[in-house]
Length: 185
Image 1 (cartoon, rainbow, N blue to C red):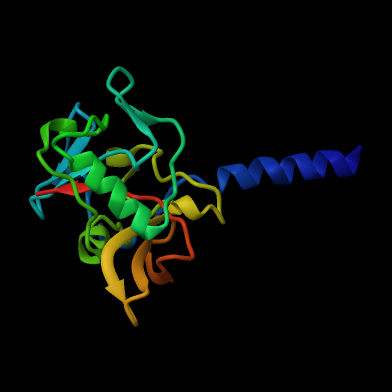
Image 2 (cartoon, helix red, strand yellow):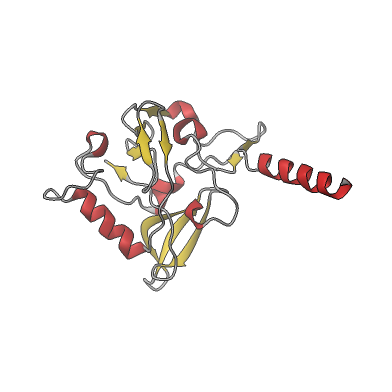
């Protein structure tokens, strides 16, 4: 019985460890005050002038709860590019076509993704005020990695952002399936 209680307590504390942690000693690199959260499922970044979807592809914006719901989808990089094309297709009927009033969505380059990183925080390293729990993932979940449009190395790799720690990595575009977050001008 004592061992079961110990295991239960360890499990309880492990779940709490996934909550965002921020250092008070480090100046905010992406303070929430620079973002304007729109009720239409987007937010505007006053520093960069970009508009971002608040939900990764697969999740759905719930205007009543003002939050994302559902499960993040992961894609091979080429499939992610095809998905963006279908979202922007004028003759198509994709549910995200003209989402948030934006004419065209695209995959961000790695610099744009990194601009969302909050260096003072981790788990996730993104503003929870803007994204809520969109980037609240269990360790080891590949949906925590976000594809960019930036090729790397020999052209077979693509740069990604690890939303948990805010680190940048390059991965083989045909070998891995990661999440997608879209941006508009």
